Length: 269
Ligand code: 8Y7
Picture 1 (cartoon, rainbow, N blue to C red):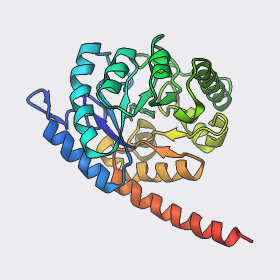
Picture 2: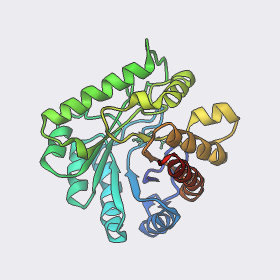
Picture 3: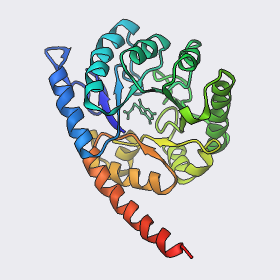
Picture 4: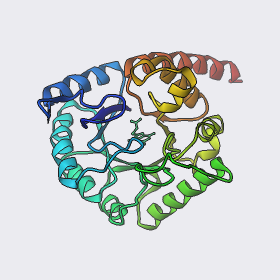
């Protein structure tokens, strides 16, 4: 999954798809085509920064940013995911052709699950402790892996009660969303215990602060660490990785896939 931030202020690539304070659809298209050529099968479009401390934007602003991009990406033949916490944005994005809703609040908007249930899109549920404005002030857990798993299981249950088929869902531990360094690394090391039933696991570690803390590098210099993190995540069970550096990540994952193919063949009777 390639990250397409349609925001002037995202932590790692904010503003790069803007020209004269407006979304530049030509830049968006070129970036999307580069990501697809690099191996992305899903593009995740977001119009609201959820970085720690970010101030929320209005639904109107989010719609202005996201809807034209969703409509344009539909022509490229890729799976279009929309990163939103707002049911109204989800509804309009689905009408504009979105295939998937990536909800970092896992249905905090009381109308979100209903919107998803009334349509046939995929729906990603992510764990977050608190809200972006304050989530990194004092993250606290008794047992982070068990708590993240239990929370995601309860959100999956809510979706099923609303009539959303399990085949439409994925879950995500939400690296960096109300988590200390130790919480993040515990979740990565024990990723398989986060899974709910047989549902796919999505992991987003790309360029995140935890990689900066490990390497001492700024966001734009976190490509190598991000690629390592993506490989580790897939090796520990991730089915999808949300990344900025699609081509580099895809190459690295080809190495893992090649090793797995041989390991599988030699394990066969
Ligand atoms: C994640 C995410 C972000 C993540 C999912 C960033 C929108 C920060 N991180 N969605 N969104 N999982 N599902 O690194 O980890 O771009 S925003």
